[in-house]
Image 1 (cartoon, one colour):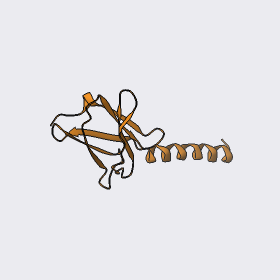
Image 2: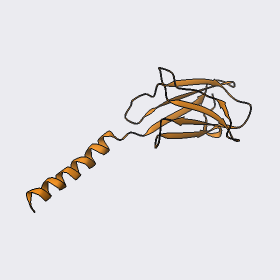
Image 3: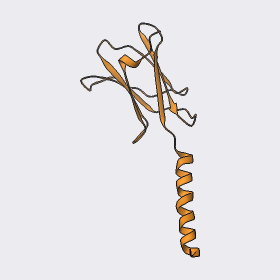
Image 4: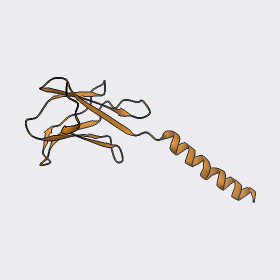
Length: 107
């Protein structure tokens, strides 16, 4: 193996390690506080929060029922809609989480 091919192999190997070290997955959890209020918390698998990230409550007909963004504490609390809905945490391409109303924990 020449020095040039060894350097190329080392570069590819290092790029693979740095990509996996920087990888983080989006996470979002929603819980009913009571019969009327739901609180969602978003963040990433590396432990970082997600303040300012879009979190919309969307009806099954695709209308946005509650437009929102996570607050400084990476949470958003909203009144439970009367219509069927899901929650969309959208931190950009590849960083999206959908939570159906059926998956939201009761109080």
